[in-house]
Image (cartoon, rainbow, N blue to C red; front, side, top):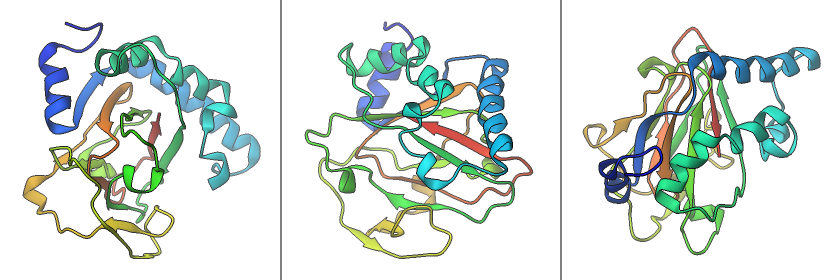
Length: 208
């Protein structure tokens, strides 16, 4: 038994390439992080620009506090061990009724990290319901990269609209529904994407 995850949870991650949901903070604490983000946006007169959404922990104290949040670190340590490095962070915010989506892809294909001993902890700062465009996982971690094609779709949030050259039946996918204050963990080679936000609220995720 780990600090946060059960032995069964660790085994599922190693088998399927992901595990969720994990409670790491209260909804009230998550709302506090959201308020700090949106207070800054209000002071600047608009949503964060794209260059402010990457390596966010180097720019904002609230983001650094999430990266070093004890419960998040404990959950990651249960799988990765105590010797951890935060390589990057990204803010993924879809506005209400936003057509933006992320095509099915593997992060490992274009991150270029070797070895692929890399995990993303994705923190929900808003309600991530079925309607809100949650991440979609394909269970099972491939042993090697899958070829990508560029789609260049105007609403695709990936720079070139990268997607795997394999069609994935919807019945084989899992939607990552999360409440504010919960996280999901996924392996760098896990195939995943997300649909548009059809809800009435922003869908805000912070990826570590």
